[in-house]
Image 1 (cartoon, rainbow, N blue to C red):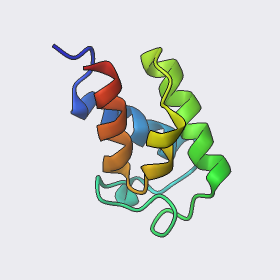
Image 2 (cartoon, one colour):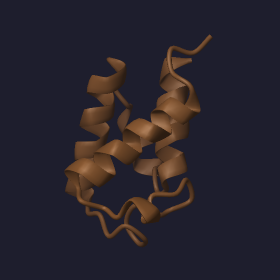
Image 3 (cartoon, one colour):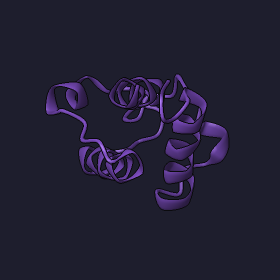
Length: 83
């Protein structure tokens, strides 16, 4: 049994994007591309990874981090760490 559901992880990512990075809530969908749709840069992506590490107490391996393109990729990678 996972410590967090995919829905809880998505909601945490959404909270980070809306509150910290001032992304419009309507734009935050599971298939939104972090770089093309949300116009984030690599520093923003690192910030998300650090915040998710604090949320889960698990570190996202660099090889997983490099594969992330969409919000769903973030959710799946984090879920894989906590299950």
